[in-house]
Image (cartoon, rainbow, N blue to C red; front, side):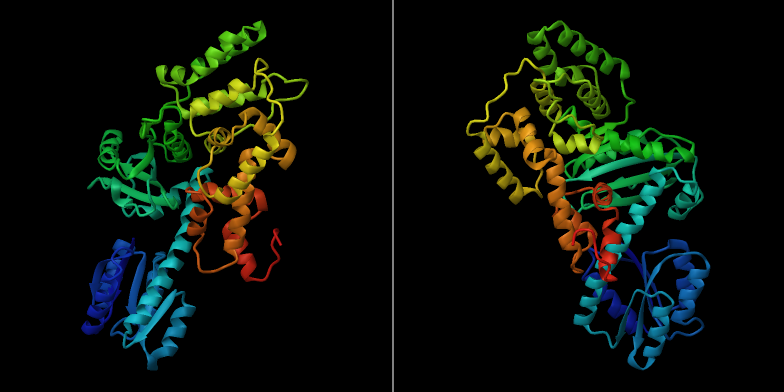
Amino acid sequence: MYRVIVVDDEVWALKGMQRLLQHRADRFEIIFETTDPKEALEKICEEQPDIVFTDVRMPDITGIELMQQVKERGITTNFVVISGFADFSYVQQALLEGAIDYQLKPIDIHKVDEMLNRLYTKMETRRSFDELHVYASLREGEKNTKKLLEARFRRPLYQKLQVVTVRFRNSDFDRKILDMGCKVQVFSLKLGPRKCVYIINSENDKSDCIYALLAAGRDEISSAGISQCTEHMEKISMLLKNSELASRDYFTDPGKIISRYKPANITKVTRLLQTVSEERKAGHYQYLKTVIQEIPEYFQTNGLTAEDALSLWNQITVSAPEKNGETPADPEYLDLDGLLEKFVDLSAMSEYLYEQFPFQEALQAGTVNHQFNQLLDFIDHHYTQDLYLKDLCGQFYINMSYCCELFRKVKSMTFSQYITSLRIERACELLKTPHMTIQEICECVGYNDYFYFNKVFKRKLGCTPFEFRKGRERGVTDAVD
């Protein structure tokens, strides 16, 4: 929802704009309205709204001067100008000053409705780009961290910083779920249709309060991760990464919707790896089978996290034994996003690891090629959904390890790489049309995390979705054509 201030020296026009915006209360919230442009200037500086609707001709301060004075104070509020037809030259000047849209008097309800839809799409696209940029800058620990944080918070910074990553069950979520009242500042970064990151600035550690608020809204939440608290602003990058890791702990414990960050338990993971290695070398395959199948229970007993699961996966796969003189079917080194894209949970990962060891009898091809083609056809028609190799192999009666080999031999890529290629190809098609925002495209092709979608897209094509679309608008030939 976008915070709005409306200023017009004519009361009837002010009330008319108020009524029209109330019809879009799910998208625009009027936080202040006035007929006095001087009062409006003070409130804009204080509240820093997302949008200001302003008349052009007003006494004392014109709409153009209001825009200029706001800009001089370093405030990046978006302006929509309202003007009589005879004053259209003012509108042109306002657009040159950076106004993002305009509306002519007398106000036509149908034209305003079109303008508000257009404005919302434009704001969503801009916000997606801006918030992704802020998140990426903070995540990479750039030197301007303090400046970025101070620009987002509306009061001097308190001593403590904390980060919460939340994934919601649907895209119509409330950003204010972590409203903690006075002496706490919160700003949110929407990173996808159903993902939001909250950066919290307060006088003390708010973990218990955060957990209680999230628990109260757990019906709306798919998963959430709470970082530790720090006094050091330069550690914001670490907080972002840790809250993200904590939000994925459902991978090792499906009942864990809300999780506080815990450092990786290297000792417990190393002990498990040593057991696997020793039993494999000794040829105790029956016991090794038990050890691997009990990995989920071992993780829950020892309170291990998704970060520990990632460490286990990467260390086992890089040291996995050869099978019939060949390397394992799918020994890719993954990041956490890749692991969760590949497996629905730790049990599925453990089952796959179990199949990689030589005590498994290889499944003969037989009629499996036909089943594999059916599986591919299913993926081609359902790639925007959450698909997991274990489920598909069960659905089409194919051994999972052998299925990985078929992907490598037939498609020259892994299962997860094949899904990604289909999604990015479709995203490119949708980006060529202007009527969808990048966030909508992100969700349409199967991604709920805009930051991850952006990262995958850039890795595949060498540019971001935003850059790809801008290149198309300028007539630049893209990498797909």
